[in-house]
Image 1 (cartoon, rainbow over the protein chains, first blue to last red):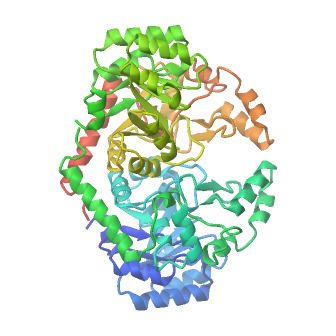
Image 2: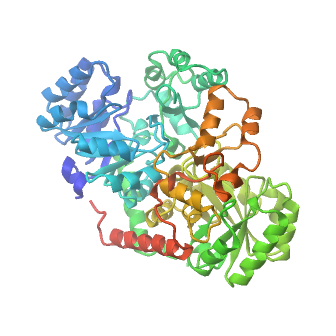
Image 3: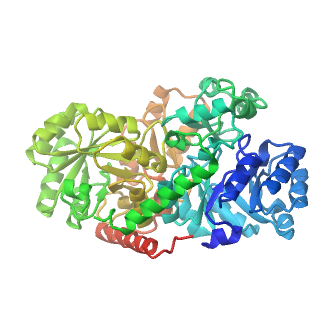
Length: 316
Length: 316
């Protein structure tokens, strides 16, 4: 047990990221049932859909689970009400001011974690009363910070800045990377990309295949003038590059993005026109398997490398 | 001893990066005398200057040392001749094709290491016959790869791809980061930014102060259309941003860059108009001290965290 597993009442300090279009109750329940913290991704769910996913997750696991809540979601108040109604144990908020909802959620006994990409915002989140921080580096998939600080440089700085537990995110898909993150001072890890290709993920089969095929350099952080997002360099990305080369304004970029691109790509499997959010670490991901097996594989490697370290195999 | 320290005949797997304008014989000799591999940065030296620095380094240490050689240097053949004349033990080549000079150097008994930012180029370098690889992530200072792969995602992929030793670079300034890099499979580390502020570095005192004051988000990778370089966001950087906002062509950007900017900033201390190359990890660097003390501090933390890990302090 460490202070993070104690806070969350879980056995293994692995948090599954609540990724839009990929994180249904099936994935969250599988991760929680296996001793981690499963997270439902509310960012792609209407209130009634979220309500259903929470109800089904509660039915499928007696273990703690959580909901990821991007605070810029238009119907956010309805989401909050549903979360409170169901007494969801943990909420991970992102993309917004942690001051707005933390007190209300905590008053209901809900553990609140906020996602940041800098130690400055880690400090602000701590001051807003959150229980833990997810610190996410530049290599992470999906929406991301503007300062481009990588996980390796971000984690020690955040750990040094705040007193509450820090969960490392971005670039972590293996036991080695998990151990590296903990050596840097993290209390646990949040893993996204690797769970996109879990059997229980609701990512479209074509998107999963696309993730498996993504090699080094296959993703890019783009749309920095709108909302920075890391995605696979597909035809939609090329359209953006073309627009950039013609000096497109943020408004024009927003128009190209349009609505529903992420759903189209990640949920409906349109690999050309869709937005395919994934981390750099997709280059290390080669197999679709159940979430429990993914966790076992990561933890097996974690303990194996730790054992090698203890045995002096890394000595010089 | 591990396979890297064995290859290089050094005691500690710390390679000091051969940074332009900051890596004179004094720094290289100090690092080598303390058991690491000190490197003279030839990229900012005329042939006769390099000749002098190598001669003085040889006089100042009986330990192995090296020269960093950017292969795009116009007088490269003269540099090679000087290196061979002096029988410099190690050459680290970068920014060019490792096929061109590796055979010639190795025929003289010189150990050749090549710097890459992808596993694809690591494989090409291995095929070209180099003895080891420096794999450098997106967070590193100075010139950098176009694919923006971070150290955390790059190292395991390169380690998996090649059979020769891999030296991790980018974002490493502490013992924790060094241990993390070795957990990821690296055989050693190359450290740049931290040695920029070594007492023996030839960086201008004002540039050193500027590095100490650089906080998270204080650097950016820019000039991607010309030669990607990570530098401090100073007035020169703002001029580039202004040019970008006006859709400047690569030619216009090259004109703004002009000649001698790095010397002006890093060696002459012009913090406004100069190019100030440094890594993201500058945010963790707070003190000017002798190279030997920097190394001691890093290794002390490395062994301390390793000990904590062995004692179960990271268990859960």
